[in-house]
Length: 369
Image (cartoon, rainbow, N blue to C red; front, side, top):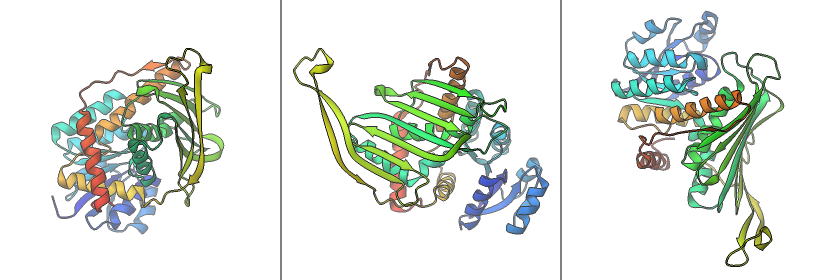
């Protein structure tokens, strides 16, 4: 591989342009080409990014000399076909979420990348967010006491997608956050959705996820809410932590408040025989080194390709999220009936722990900014 990693960006919408900006600014990488089906969009980008080759032909772009890796940020329904072509062409791939819209297709991408010994990374960007990593550290340290539940709200007036519904568009963010924070995968899901905008797909949804140890997660997504909210809340017996991604001054707030039950006697038999201990302390906001999460993600991708180490958000993590989303769809079709998730034990949990530990070490030493 050349000293500079050559990048092809496929899909030049809002996120695609942000990838171009980040990789153009990095000395380790060079953006070789931009590929988009919209000629007018490429003409707009020509003025801002004059160096990359511009094309509407993916096959032509993959044949260009110097392309080592591809960033796929097309519409979600096109992710699989584009990523498959790129992997078959021998290119490392960073693909936006969701990595595919079916478990079968996501598994094919994982298997293809493994067979070709290529890096496959999924853009679960919140795993590279300093606030999310900070909250995970509190959970891992047991600072919240007994973990009760988590909930997330991701609402706004649009933007309305025409390839997937609001749940596939938004909920993968929060499912990946919950899985990462808890270090676990849900055992069952229950979900309902509705089509208030009458656009043939659900634009509002509510998801409940049952994690091990009876921990519950709840996700509310909407394209039809007047209030834009990007919030994740974790509630424990000792503390409550709020992550508000729209608050630039206090993205994380810790409420030193909680309630816990302990039996009054040795063998309680009724509700009245429990004593409830209530904590009512201060509210604090920790100092968080908050760089641009997308830049951190891009740097991590470059490191994983150049050093051959597995990404924190690798294909298996992306596959896990897709599998949960498929179960969400089945539950919606059954008007909220719980759907059990059966996970194969093929994934090496100690290996995942080592991967996360390695990533945290690299971020703390400055290897990943």
